[in-house]
Image 1 (cartoon, rainbow, N blue to C red):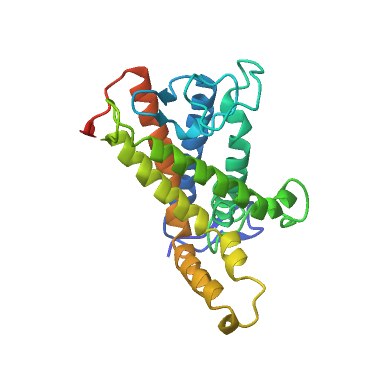
Image 2 (cartoon, rainbow, N blue to C red; image 1 turned 90 degrees about the vertical axis):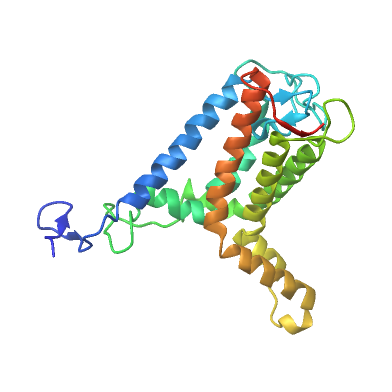
Length: 264
């Protein structure tokens, strides 16, 4: 066995693990960082998010609630004024979506390990001398996860509506393109991630002492519990699908290539 590594001389052994335990947190850090960089760049580009011919709306800009939105992209009205170029439409919605992801139980584990090394992996000592848990700011805000869940449900419903509109034929009627299929996959993954949330599981089955007296809620709790076992996979899959669909709509809107049509 290789000699254990230490954090500061002979004070303590960091870990006895000899495998590449640092790869998962490194991969997580790179993946989340790439998404954050893409999200920031895409948000402040503030262009190429609406394809009128196919009724494609980029997920990062949905719902588009600002008067700065391009014509046709505001499916739910424009209650917010056009404040300034540095206040693009996603600013009014993305904080709630990001709040849901940031306070998610899985993502807490992911970025605590990847960025704060708290701890970086199982059986690996973290470098922090004190542990305060989530008992003070800003981590005290993690308890707001259940409220962000309600906002995430509304956003998922809006994205579902956007997907229905995407079944629009170029020449009228019903049409299906590659973008339509990608949007369908995206909303399925988003609903899977949202409904597999621990808050959803508690909402449908919490505070029940006898499941036999609540058969409907028991069935819902059982279904959500099965989804909950795949929460990590759905978290990453939905994160990737949102970025992919947003990038696809941006490329089609910019004229980089036409949307391949399957029907009409």
